[in-house]
Image (cartoon, rainbow, N blue to C red; front, side):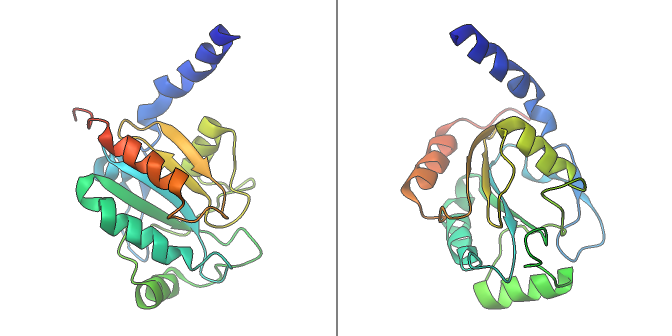
Length: 180
């Protein structure tokens, strides 16, 4: 059984550097950026967000994580999605204004994407392939290590200040940054 477990994890580790080698536009921006070039080498919390959801107040906790750990090589990456009961219906400009004015969001937010179904964006396809878990709702969280491996995921109900999530972030921040 142990041998099977090792074999099952080897492909994900081997494919890890490719996880972030994708381009997305910053929210309301015009030019796509490569996530690996911008965020590679950091510990990342990738979150699908929505402005009209019961979990929307988690923006505040996500920003608190960004402020607390950002200087140590951590970033929250927000990806607005309208996939769950139309809870992110606005334009990217409206989403940006809401996040900034209502919750003071400064962490990187990217273009509106699909995180489930046939139109799932490539990043979320890769996150799902690495974990076997697709977001079941808004504010699903994937933790990515400095070397580009998905090392954990938490459902929407888990708040950003949850002790297990914070412990996982702190554990990953202790790992040395890979040579770039």
